[in-house]
Length: 366
Image (cartoon, rainbow, N blue to C red; front, side, top):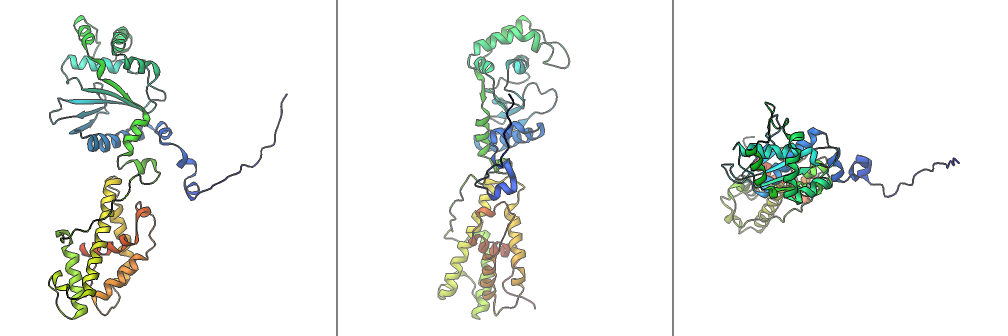
C-alpha cells in the first residue's frame, strides 16, 4: 500500500564560505572528478601528469604524447635516455568503465607487431593509467603473463587481425606467433586511478585542477650574509635614501655601520626582500608556468603604494618607511597566492619593485 510522508526541510549545518562560492564541487573527491572529465580535459590531465610528474619528478629525459591516428599503440612515450632506445610506455585510457581484455587486446597486438618489425624497441615497462582503472579479468591476466599471452593468441583473429593497422590485415603467421609466444609480458602493469592522482598531486598542476588549497608549506626564507648581484639595484637605492636623509654620501653598506638607525633598517629590509623572494620561489614550485601570480601580486602592491611613493617627504628614507608601511596594510584579494601572503611579503615586494625600476626613493631632476 502506498504510504506518503511529508518532505521536511533539510538541516544544513557547518556551512562554509567555500560552499557559498563553489557549492558541492569542493566536496567531490578528485578520483570522482577524474571520471567526470571530458576527453579534452582528460588529455590535459595526462599532459600535466606526464610533464609535471614523469618528466620533472621521475626524471625521464624526454616525454612524448601520441594523440594522433596511427599511434602504433603508444599513448605516452617516456624515454630513459636521449636516444629513446630505453623507454617506458604509458597507455592512458579514458573510458566509462574499468578496462576489460576486449578493450586492449589490440594494444597488445600492436606492441608485438611493431616491435616484431623493429618499428621501435620493446619498452622496459608497459603501464595502463586509466580514469576508471583496470577490471578484475584484465588485472588477473596482467598478474599472470602466461595467461595473458595465451589469450592474446586466442583473440588475435577477433580483436587484432583487422585493427592493428589501417592499411591491411595482420595475420598471425607462424613467425609472428613464435615472437608473441616468446614475448615477455611481465613488462605489463597498471596504475590505479588513485595512484595517478597522488602522482599528479606532486605537480604544480594539482591545485588549479582539483583545488583544496596548497599541499606544500613555504620554506623558511633565508637571507644570505653576502649581498647577491640580484640585490644591487634596490640596495643602491636604499643607500641613496640614507644619504639624502643624513646629508652625507654612503657609497657602500660598510659605511652604514657607524649609524645604527640606517644599519638596522638596512638589515631588516634585506630580510623582507628575501622573504618576498621566497614567495616567488613558492609560486615556482607549486603553481604551473603561466600563472604569473607573483608578478600580479607585485603589480597589485605597486598600484596600492604608488600614490604614497609620489607624495612629498623630507627624504628618501622617510619615503621608504611610509611606502613600506602602506604596503603592509594593503588588503589584497583575488591572487592565487593570497592564502600564504604575509605582511613581510608585501613589505619586501616594495624592494622588488625598486629592483624592477618601478620605484625610486629619491627624487631626481625635479
